[in-house]
Amino acid sequence: MASMSKAPPFWEADGALRAYANRMAVVACCLALAVAGLASEVIITRVKPPTVIRIGADGQATVISPETHGVAAPAQLEDIHAGEAPTALEKEHFVVSFVNEYMGYDEHTLGQNWADALSMMTANLKLDVLEKMRQDNTVGQLQDQHARSVVKITSAQPDASDPLTWHVYATRNVSHLVDRREVYQKLAEAYTVRLVEGIRSISDPSGLMIAEFHSQQISADNNAPQP
Image (cartoon, rainbow, N blue to C red; front, top):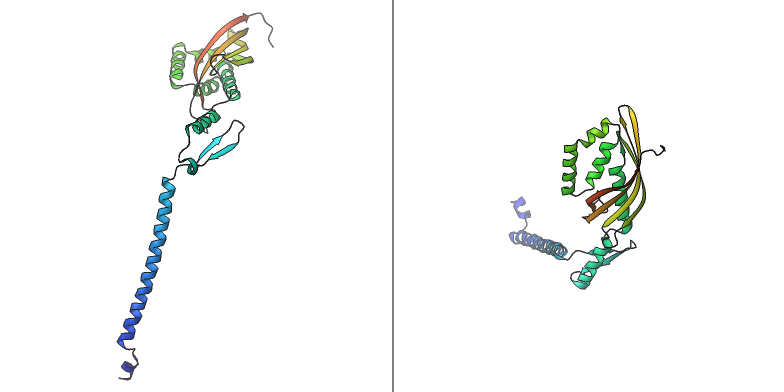
């Protein structure tokens, strides 16, 4: 009877339970509001238009805020496209690199040089070149002859009517073995290279590809002294 007399009255225990329940209800409401706020922030971030960054010709970056215009204006998108277009210097570097890889080689570097040159071409041009190489056994013949070609580019200029078409002039020192005798030629050649613009990427920062390539021999000197 003594221990039962020390127990709190039932109404006090019931009041304590009700107080704890009220506190948990308040905490649950606070957590629900916090979750709702986070969810709304995520939804707003998802539906918000992306931030457009324009890279100028001088390399300066300008942020076009989507909040002021809703979406980028057409004029701004044109400026972005122009800013990302390959420059004349990038085109010249791409063309010169291709000519050096494709026309300059020796028996040890022929495979790697032409693999690099083929990777710079469009898919349809690459297939045409590979088919012609297969039919003529070009690689095998040049390797059997221990052929060597050294290119020296004298000029590379864009076409006056088409900035994606380039005219390259070069001299080429070519030598190979015929019946254990070295045959040497000094050639003057002209190359016409037509480019197409693709998508810039880490592996292809210029976004350029070779769409057409034509070679024309201007002169040949079989009696030129070897350099």
